[in-house]
Length: 107
Image (cartoon, rainbow, N blue to C red; front, side, top):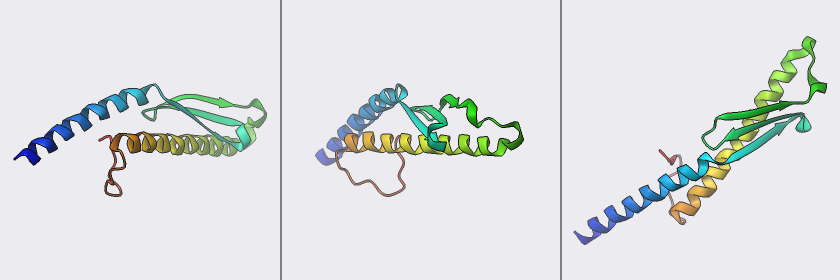
């Protein structure tokens, strides 16, 4: 039974560390870019869009699709950077614990 008690204690510690990590990530901002920096998108740690900057030189009412594509690419770039940051924080938290592929934490 001591193994079960130890496992429960470790689970509680992990839950506490996860809560700390989530709070830390709330303050994180990552910026993605597209079009050589003509469009930048800043996301918060929970994936919320906080800011979009568009260089006026790319605004063309006749070709709005290019702008839409650049915004989409900027958001995707920022999201990829955010996912990498979260994975990095998770690796620190789990201490090299090999979690199954596809298991997404925090839940």
